[in-house]
Figure 1 (cartoon, rainbow, N blue to C red):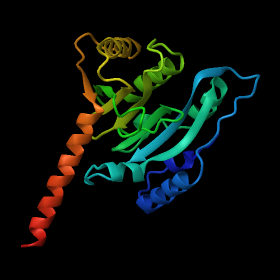
Figure 2 (figure 1 turned 60 degrees about the vertical axis):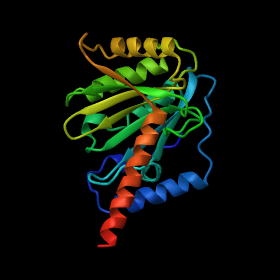
Figure 3 (figure 1 turned 30 degrees about the vertical axis):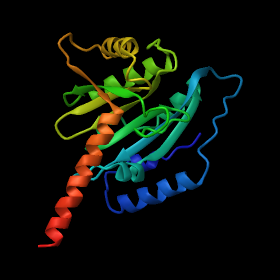
Length: 229
């Protein structure tokens, strides 16, 4: 297993971008960890990578910035390995704003462009402050316990801490499969024990990617305009 939990237990932002950049470069250059499950442990159906990211408030979101801020902090393939990782993590509600945990199956990076994600989408649940830690734990246990019953469709899940609300999302491989996305939505509503009137939004990754690219293009044009003044 691979852990970098100490990086998550500090609220000091000094040098954070530089350190994150070094960590990402290290992950990119070195092979991602191989997960070995001892025979005496309870093997999960899938092995998982746990990622962390944090974007400084005010920074424009972009695919490049996201990739630079993404940091692998743990991996596991058994029930015992999961609890050894999870017990060392700070809870989502203790994270700073604009911080995210990403729990994805081994082989899938939490990025729209990943081969497993590119034709998929995600269900989004917006939570009032104070609910994220409980909901995230319920979701993670449901994923590991294969409660969604949609085969290999689930890619991973994300919990995102924001200033006025928190966001939980479940990513799946095939956005065009209405029956599967509906089952994921209904299971998500059940495992999070959401009120019947809770609104869940489904967003295709290709739409998200287009929106970010358009935003980046517009910002580049604005910057060029001001540079010429």
